Length: 612
Ligand code: G6P
Image 1 (cartoon, rainbow, N blue to C red):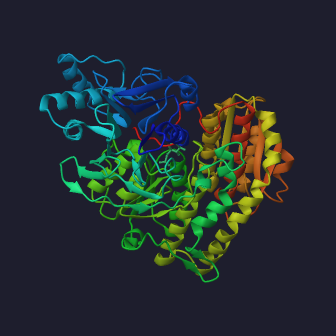
Image 2: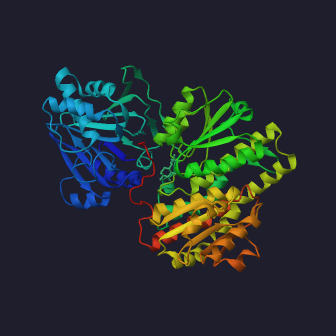
């Protein structure tokens, strides 16, 4: 949430920053701002709206300067408006700051500063930080970086900050705790950003700043130390990211591009890990603690949003194949309970971004109780990937559309591989079934390709339902979490109210909503609950609901009952979610586009939720 960009070097900072902010807009897009260092002052521009609105606002105004910072906001403290937009400045305007995160003790610091005569323009926690730094610098008569360090020792919360001063046009100060910050290293120039996407076109050498570290950056060098004042040696890594992976590549939206990237993403997730012919299945990132997983008495899965839905499917995998009991927890609830974690429990944390604040905090809680934690993340080097003991990346490539698509199927792919590996080692799966499933997994990318061929057909169905006010999604067994995911996709990007339910639960409530106005999407592929779901379809039809059914190719019964049928390729019941979710992603995408919604940047949402 919130994207931050900084540049120091010899290029036009404005160009680098605006381009960077556009790449980070998925993190928040309710207002944006820039501060440029100019001879003896800071030039500030801020505007409510998207980065484009900021650009239009700046127009032909002075944009020169080779040092600057920029921010795209997802409002936490105070509504989205020009004043609350970052950067924020100190009382005398000599310091400017941008911030991603939340300062928890800002109100007590603010009160102290007000008592000392400070006045504030905005409602934000961030403005308090810059005033606090200013105050400390004046009282201690110290350097700016020392004032930042002292301030951060008093600050409670999460932050990635960049601070610049009009008095030093050759210095930028960066610090982080809990929110991401990457520093691109060029020749005589540095690029700073919330993730690597604004950096990759300039350099592939990066430093991931660690929690509690402060970097003092000039054109000549970068010095890093901890907030306890212990110097550290920067570790420069090579980025494994292609520019084309973060561009739309001819698609109208990132979401559509990412939906269509799934066959490749799933092949990448399995590459070098699974080979059915050789009976080979290995997850290189899970070695040292593999036995803890194999011998686990219970698995606790922690996640949020779509990743939580992937966790629900994984519950079926681990219970079905490994006979290990599984609890799937919303990270946000888990962290505030007093959860029972026993010695034999292991935790699997699932997160696309690897930055979700609740998931990170839940991991810390589990760790403090002695748990071994496995991560299933997409973003390499992310906070969650680093906070876990071991794990497996999904290798889906950058996911930029706010609605998660290829990360979901990538997560399922990794989780099924984990479960199969554990089951094989435990001996809870027969050789035959294990091999059948490996073979089937290898066919999945081409089955997903086939499901994507349904795009035009789904567009037509979307046209029929684009004005619906409600939607119900129903599934059973492995397809129940898919129903939840289908409903989430629709509501988040088209703003149509949608609910996902286990189909059998319909009669305990949602059936009351069914009339001729209510579209009901059944995920009714041919599996062990097929007969049961047919009864549920009939119950809906008896009440004049409109049924859209996702079925297995060749199904003869459901087409006779449903109003619209979407046929997906046949696969094993456990693997079906990888295929049955595809039409639901396309349905939500087309409905949202037809309704004129901003598919990649839906209102109020952000891709990476770094606040709780
Ligand atoms: C946000 C995103 C969702 C995502 C969820 C969890 O709500 O919009 O797409 O599923 O966060 O994010 P994570 O990065 O932890 O998977």
